[in-house]
Image (cartoon, rainbow, N blue to C red):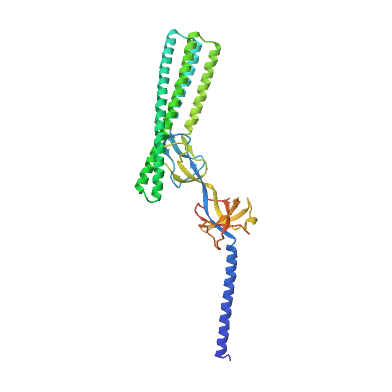
Length: 373
């Protein structure tokens, strides 16, 4: 019969054996997990940003999207109301009709009353040319003033911002300086636009005056077969100008250049925008990538085009990735890097692109990259 003392000894041995077994399992699992984690690298998923700007100066008359909308390439985004192009289009239609009528007159011959009427047209156009010269001088003076005012407000804004950062100026002063700076920037753009329009108007009237003077000369001196050919060429030129203006008017409608997501709408209806102003900022949904940082001992095992596995804790699926950039120089470990092992002092930046995103991975998610080493 087994004594109580023997049972106690057996129980102690069993407990010690069980404890040793659990410790062995724990350290083995910890080694396996740690070894696996050392093969993983972490970064934040990002998308390329695309700033969509107009090709013309004008006022926003329609916005078709909002922040967060998914859009397809070619989708209607914004309308720009450009009065200048509309006026040029109407003027080109008139020029085409005038050229066609001129050809008919050339074929019919000229009467004395027509010559008198043409002289009056030349006189009126000459007055318009002189007026446009004055407009250019006025617009040039306004531009010089707007430019000087802009430089002054820009300096004040920079100085105020510098003082604000040093806590010598208030937020109100900074906001006021910024608003004044932005207002003078808009005034400068408007002044440039007005000068450009004045020059275009001058060139248009100058060309019409020369054409009218030539027509008057031909009316007085008579026409030839060559004159008929010239009139036909003028008709062709007017048609091409009409086509060109229509192409410019088509720029009033801004379409999405790619598939993506609207990150922000930066202007409102009625605001005036010019070339270089980003009306809408889009995220390229087909170009999702992440930056990670590896130690130099890993670098020889990596190469451009190498396929990797990408995961996210929020999406239960493996994604295929590709290394598209390897830094040539090392850098200090960024403070915001996320790893499961001790940080090393110097690392190399690696950029990995997601190849088969199904729109479940989003910009800002934490990504886990496995090189399979």
